[in-house]
Length: 258
Length: 222
Length: 47
Image (tube, rainbow over all chains, first blue to last red; front, side):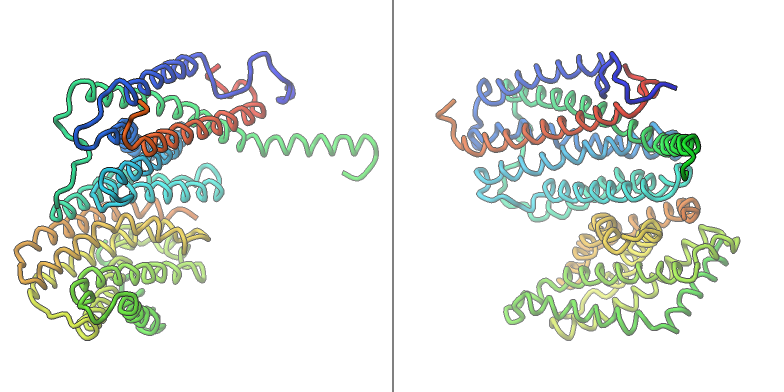
């Protein structure tokens, strides 16, 4: 077997022709989005230019919830099939989802300052999104511990159960918080006026598409990274054994202690 | 399944009776939480009375963390977990039994807390049927979800820090539902509170069902 | 565009979003590269 450290003509990374295309599409879409979001779309009547933050905030929110769905799906599939791919996908989706959730919260908070005058408001969505954030953090923390615990055949059940419950929990929390806050509705500006149209609607749709593409790109890379981590973990022990035996062979040959 | 549940519940409650952890440690903790709230919020301006529903349920949540941790610590010691697995008891029964024992302990704690809130916060009790139903439904949900997540965290060394962040976001709906239902009952508009009670009952049903199904595989984990 | 109201907030929000995403992307790809070197190419089924 050839030494795995020999540099190959194919560069070692998680990229592939597919991701390069996807990445190129994403970047050009992003450039277009920036143009529309910051320059070509008009300012809102009520929110003025703060609405331009919605073109980040709303897409990242949608992607974050999509990531939850994916994590739950992957956990369910893992419970049925026990294949490694589903396990890795669950973790990858959750981690990328976590990044998008954080950005959603930050941009939402920054948006809130000029619009409502405050960085935090007990709006149902910001509250339930923050809880989603913590749910994801807990899930990933549990997985990490599960990863380090037993061997491959036994670990994963804990993470899978929590992952399976992720989407239901998100939905229950969202529903409860929504109901709870709807009783306190004072004169708040709704986060997104449902009757927006024209260029603003287009920019929003474009934003959803672009951030969706970005999520896909990040997911593929994170998935492959996770896949490699599994491989490296599995072969790590084999590697160590090979090296140990090599050492022993050398020691015997030279007559020294093994 | 129910016979096994009864066995487990009986065992857990007997352990509690002998060790008296809930009565000697968790109940004082509950009172302590109420006092801390009183110290943090101005007792003289009626905030405590107005907020008593929410404060009650926050205190219940904190106590439930302790009760759940405790329920699984007694298994971890002396290899109790392996004994459970080898005993041949139906895992669903084990789940229901453990949840039932936690339910009883939490119900007792809630009575202590209720007394505390009435005495210390000056809350007046009205709408008792709604209050009782809410407690039943909420506690059932707390016990079921808590037992499920408790067993998840149980085998891990970081369980004390992991269980809260795993469980509390999940229990946020219970806090919301319990608080709103209590507010309705105490405010004299019980009709507003029953839908929230319904939410709590649904939550309890969901987690009891799921826990019964998922407990078997989880118990197999080392 | 310079006459934009709340320009500080808009700029800060977008900057935070883009920088975080770029940083995360970079970190993921870098970790992927270093791991990929240690794993034989047969395991990397996407190239």
